[in-house]
Amino acid sequence: MKTVVKMLMVLVLLSGTAVAFCSAAEETRIFVDDVGREITLPVKIDAVSPSGPLAQIVLYSLDQDLFVSVSSEFTDAQAKYIDPRLLTLPVTGQFYGSKASTMNPESIMELNKQLNIDVVLDIGEAKQTMKPDLDDIQSKTGVAFAFVTQNKLEEIPGSYVKLGELLSRPERGRELSDYVTALLAEFDNGMTTIGDHKKSLIYVTAIDGNSVSMIGEGSYHAEVIDYVASNLAKSAASGSGTGDEYTMEDILQLNPDYIIVGYVDGHTYYNTIMNDPMWRSLSAVKNGNVYEAPYGPYSWMGGPPSIQRLLSMIWLGNLMYPDVFDYDIDERVREFYSLFFRYDLTGAELDDLMVYAKPAPASASAQATTPAQAPAPLFGLLAGLAAAAVVAGRGRSR
Image (cartoon, rainbow, N blue to C red; front, side):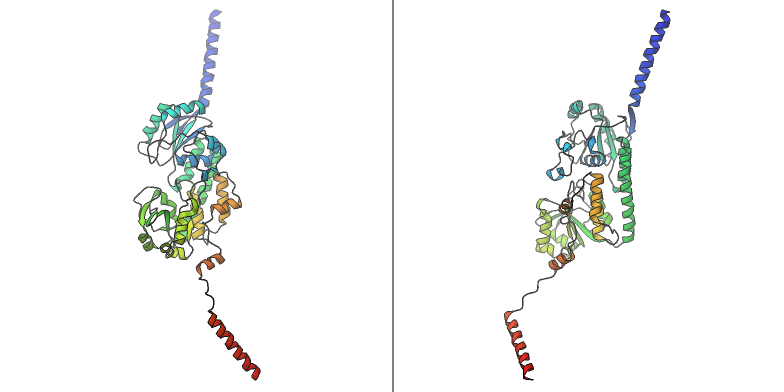
């Protein structure tokens, strides 16, 4: 009898262990990231730390509620568009970047005790050493690290599907992927129609006296420019987000159809182009084709070059080829902000955002380009009156 009881107790213990094991297995899953790493993750993701500005932007578009830390603090200009909760979160830095890593394994381990981080997300272009690097920091911290590729425009739809899978938000990932897929198809068709008739353009990121910085052809940061226009800035020598340096003499020789200028406080660069005599000799200035790239919460032209570049494509397509990309730009911008940033722009906010990003009304353009007529000289006026009096007198004498 005792033997039977013992056997029953053993079976109960084993069944309990099996149930616990199955329960634990059901609560986790294996995810393979874009550098081929197998990562054990919770079935449902609730707490994410972004690594770097690209991850921060893309994660925000997918689900802002997932943040438990930020890669970097938001600026005052960005903050108005951002969920206020995120402005109070701890800063965990980035593992990769143009400079040395600002993500400290010890700080991640310490913060993880408070935040219970499900995964640290990195997004961008895969690097040769990324797999061993991420394996190393993951083993040091005990926190899962995952990488998703999003470098070129064509990679954005697939990256959203992958992110939806990774972050247990498949429907949201598919929604954003479908939007981008449709947008890229719309522009592929439109640019096919335009063919070899692209407008020429330069994108000015900085002006310092005779020195002008521009994004050169072929740069990662010039992908949209090269796609929708003829980028007159020579092939990029630098991978920097501000581009390469040129002289004012170089700009005068290029003489583009359009000039796009980066936003800075006070619209300084835009005002320089519009008021400086050398710049005013260019065709783009004479024809009213100088526009400032909108900024909020990030520059539409990039910086960093992420999903907001889609906005620059929507904007520039309609700006330069309104007969091909014939839509209400205000409606399309509002749609994008609502879908990707969960932010509903007011009319005043939209006007402020695009203050120098739209063509001037026809009447204003005419006033700006047509010289004011000089008043008639006083002598000529008196002579005219005298002549009229003579003619009138002759008429009466008849």
